[in-house]
Image 1 (cartoon, helix red, strand yellow):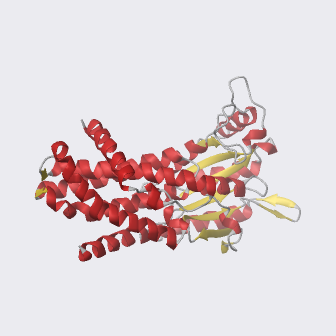
Image 2 (cartoon, one colour):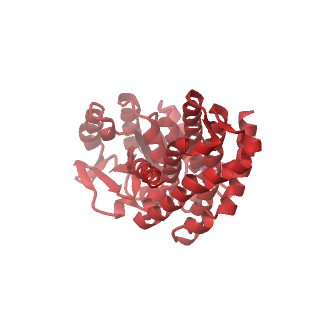
Image 3 (cartoon, one colour):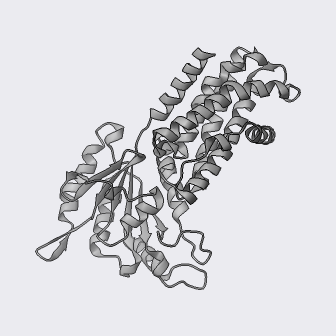
Length: 376
């Protein structure tokens, strides 16, 4: 058992340490609300954690060791001799982005958010020029993010009047990228405002075609639990299929359930990263790892024997897939309770309470039934 636990611990640590960081470029002038947007979506203002590394004139790189995301911040235009100019954006920023396309994936710009504040009441010619450059010359997903939308007048259908006008201006000038209305100070729980924060997150994650980059983006954001849940299902389905394939090649007795546990441990770690627990510090991660080791290494295997009438005496492809899928669903339930508590109190989760044997196994049994219904 000791060697098995060492193997599982190594599997967990390896998965937690495996991180790809998507590079998000945020363009927008001073005062448009970029910092507030970042703070609301990613939990802290990354730009305030430390001094940004200059990439080229007018563009700085910001990152936080605890957030699996890199932000490139540029204003889009600068004031020269008292007049705004997009010359630097055209001559320095665009070439920098193009040059990165020929570098390794982790050096490329993966997403661009172009921020416009509706509080300014107009889309400037400088912004239109920049957007034409970005959408016309760069093969990178671009979204126009309208900020500070809580302050604008609302029409009879509950839509922002200024936002609608901005959309019309963009269309009139041949700019057809996705547009999202956001407000960091008034989240989407306000029924009077049809804001697009979750849509922005969903679009951004869907635009990242590399699985690891997409999962890191979803892990970094804290504004959309549905986005985490959707990505969690993708992870669970993948590991369920992997364990099913392994057991299908070589079915084993229920007593040898530990043979599929390493893959389940990797799944547990992947889900933990997705829900952002890697950013809570070494102590919180160590406590979580201990609970999962105890759970999948001993408790789950022992408890499965009590469910033999449901699962059968042999772990074949169907049984392995069901066990792994149900474990994943039960972990998601625990992780979401932990995230909810952390966001409300700021305190690290009480993993011992969340993973109490009776409570978790009840969640597992319910999840097993749900998994069977989903696969039926």
